[in-house]
Length: 204
Image 1 (cartoon, helix red, strand yellow):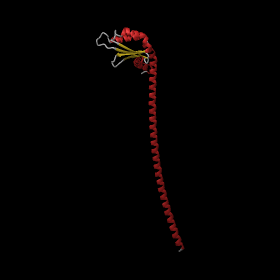
Image 2 (cartoon, rainbow, N blue to C red; image 1 turned 90 degrees about the vertical axis):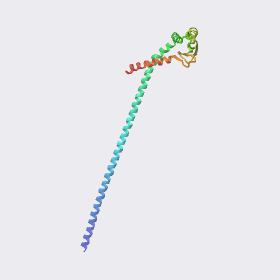
Image 3 (spheres, rainbow, N blue to C red; image 1 turned 90 degrees about the horizontal axis):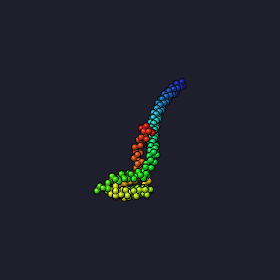
Image 4 (cartoon, rainbow, N blue to C red; image 1 turned 180 degrees about the horizontal axis):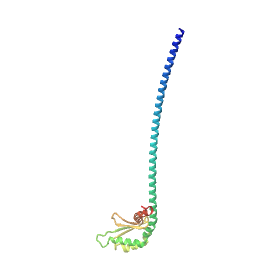
């Protein structure tokens, strides 16, 4: 009887142990499967994060590179324009200033322009002229005696300190003035010289 009881006990124990081992193996396998899934998902997410980060980094680098290139191009163009302007200004300005301060030249130009209004023409108009204050002593008698009434119907002259050289002239009360100052000639000559200067300096 005792032996049968022992056999039954051993059988129940072995069956329970076997079942427990089986369940343990199943749990272990399930846990390993879930762990593999978690690791795989984590790897996929990590790969996606790295890919996104690399893409964003590449975009940032591209934008930064484009910004640097644009800034460099703008800086080079600005520098080239400054060089052009400096060369043209240093070449033209002294010569123009000297010419526009030459009383003989100014008289000749004024005579030509005033003559174009033709005092003998019934439709001729009175003129208004603005001159530098510094030229008053040299031009006042000339304008009164040679220009006013002879080459134009009438001439009103204003001498101003703000004008360094050259002059402005136009019909009195006509609403416009023709300017012949050194700044006007510098700008006009500069427009013609800049392309040539650019070709010489930069081969364009």
